[in-house]
Each structure stands twice: as structure tokens, then as C-alpha cells.
Length: 293
Image (cartoon, rainbow, N blue to C red; front, top):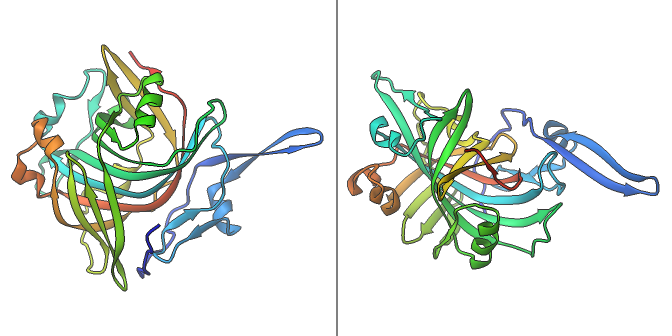
């Protein structure tokens, strides 16, 4: 695992509202206790690395979920796109989620989300020990009043995962993916992502990043429901996770040929993303997808 240097100024600003279902077996049977993330932080179970990011050192199944995994080195690269271009990928039963910029213009958003997956476990499925890398491409929508995403594509670098997800009705395909996270200086790190559909070189820390005040990080990161089309059906994927400890990152270079190929923007426009966010680590819980329609 890459060493992460110290980045000053990181503070725990907002409480996490995810509840964990911590189970232990006793002579009298299974004892279930609800544990709040703010209590975990207070008791020192939720820790931080040298970079100052949240590290979840508790390993318990999330309440109401059947699959749990640890996401590491999450990178959200975000593009402001023409709402008319984005609407082509949104089912009429969903609504495109937009933001009004400082000039009064409506912006839709698309993202490439890259991450490592570790420590996959399940309370109902006999899963083998899995560790892999993934990138998914998404558009931001609302299902009623619920902030959600539509997955345009999902890629992993594990053929075992593509086989397993095919049984779970998740449209995931194989792609060679390489993620490298290395120190870039005493107070920063460099994140490099390589695949056939996305190339990105990003720096976290160091020189200050001035985020767009029109869009708060939770607009991008706090989406607990996703929709993925498979054949003639649409499936819903629900997840649980704490409020992600996301920090702005600087994009030195990026090209997103997958999103260009979908017609969301040109090659030149793909080189000018709106923003990037980095999350060191977070615990995710989910269950097998359900058919939405």
C-alpha cells in the first residue's frame, strides 16, 4: 500500500450518520448492537492516516446490507455537461439533477469514479477473498426526491468479479486497470489512473484548490442509490456508507475516451473537468440489485 504523506488542515467537520450492525456470538446467542459512526470516532475506533483521512478500523456488517467492502483511494473526476446531452441517458422515470452556476446557467454532471476494493465479505453469499480495482461512469439524477446516479458503464480488472456480478444482474465488464498512488512531496500525493477508457493524473494536497461554491462535495459523493440498465430491465443498487471525507484535488491531465465515445463532450472538453475529489478510505455496505422496472 502506498505511503500517504501528511496534508495539513484536514479536520473532521461533519458527523457520519451511517449505523453499523455490530454482532457478536455469546453463550446465549447472537447479540446485536447499533453503533453510530460518531460514537466510533469518539471512541477512537474510526481513525485517520498520516494524510488526515478517515480510516475505518472496525470491520462489521452494515445494518440492512448483505455485502460489505472497503473502498480505498476513491477518485471522483467530474465534468459539467450540457443537460440536453445528459438527458439522453436518463429514463423518463428519473429526473436529471442539475446545479445553477454563478451565471445562472443550468449544469448537469457526469463523473468517472475510480477506486480499489478490498476486504469484500458477505453474510449470505460464499464469496472468495477479493481485491480488485474499478472505474464506473455515472450521471447524476433524482428518483423523486432521492439523489441518485445512473451508471453508464462499470469496469473492473478482475474476471472473477465479472463472473460473480453476472449472477447478480450487475452489468460489469472487464478492463485492464492500473491505479498508482505515490507521495508527490512532503504534503501531497500523486494519483495516476490508467485504462483504455480513462487516463488521469491528479495531485492531492500541496497547492490549494479553490472549489466551485455552486456545488458542494456531497452533491457528488452522497448518492446512496444507483440505476443500471441490463438488457431490457433497469436494476436498482442501494448502498450505505458514512458521509465521505472528500477533499479537492488538482487535475494535471485527464482524457475520458469512454465518456467522449458516449457523446457527452469532445476530447478537448474531457481534458477540462469541472473538479476532482479524493477519498482515502470508506466502508460500504450493499445488497444484491433489485429490479426497478
